[in-house]
Image (cartoon, helix red, strand yellow):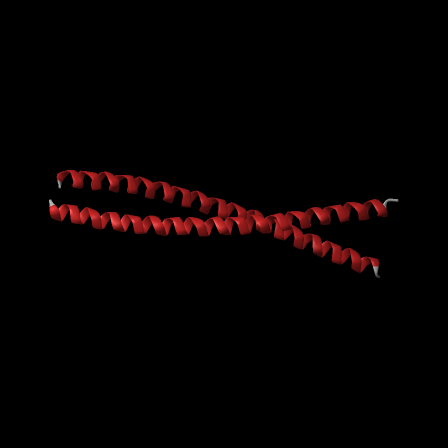
Length: 63
Length: 63
């Protein structure tokens, strides 16, 4: 029984290490998601600016 | 000792559930990252197309 308990304690330690690792991975992915979302916002703004410029340029052409 | 062993077994079960949950979260975040990267690629292409069009239009203007 003592041996079984020692084994389970070791298993628990390993699980806790795995949990720490998974949580670290989650944090890293969260950071990546934030960066990607920020980049996406920049590109969206650039596309909108560009569309507005094209519309304005077309409007001038057709005056 | 029997009780301690039962307790550790219960703790192990809880850790395993938490690990399953964390792995599910990781999978979801991976999917989100793939989606964001795809969207980003689309916007990048749109910006490049738009810049090319502007450059071409400018070249025509200055002929």
